[in-house]
Length: 307
Image (cartoon, rainbow, N blue to C red):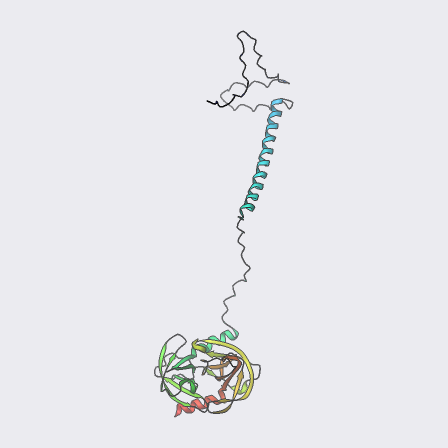
């Protein structure tokens, strides 16, 4: 049977009986005067502090040396730990989250009310309605306090009844009072107008090319839509209804569903009735829209209401 090998290890020597042992090393004597003995505690006033040991004493120098070694060791450990942590983070691919920085924002605007075109749109929108007549639809606007609404004749077609949707979402039944197909204008009436607010009619003859205008209506069924533009041309001859008529040309976006809605100036006065657009091959708005001048539309509406 094989053993585990030849034993190895430190050599131990046994001291024979009666042999002289090495004397115990005594600490070297201290240099300088020995420290004064502490006086016994005496009841009464506190014992005065003892003077520090002499500068030349070895215990003091040893204590200072040990303190310096401890400080150096702590600094080395801190540096080594930081380097090891950074290296570990790089190796593991884990990075510390970046501090969250607040993006610069402007101060809230003072609450001074609406101004400019915003105020104009807010003033006119409550008077604009969506019109639903069978499979047809479009826009219109309240023209008096008796519940009369002006729109396009092609919006209602041959229908005798229609539904108007107010800016606050209420739905009211309306009857078609009459229409003029040649001028492409029609007048509706609701039996209980309640708090319907009429628009202010302006003068299209006061318009100039370059004036700011807003087109308001329900394009593609999106009620309360406001688009802005300018007057591009005056007295533009186009086909409206069954004949050629002059119209106000604008680059404010007008799309299917805008028909019958108001074209207003920057004071919120109605200067035209949005009626037609010039469309490209794919259809839709290309920045050329036409409105019946209000100077011609208002007398037609008055005649329809009288008859």
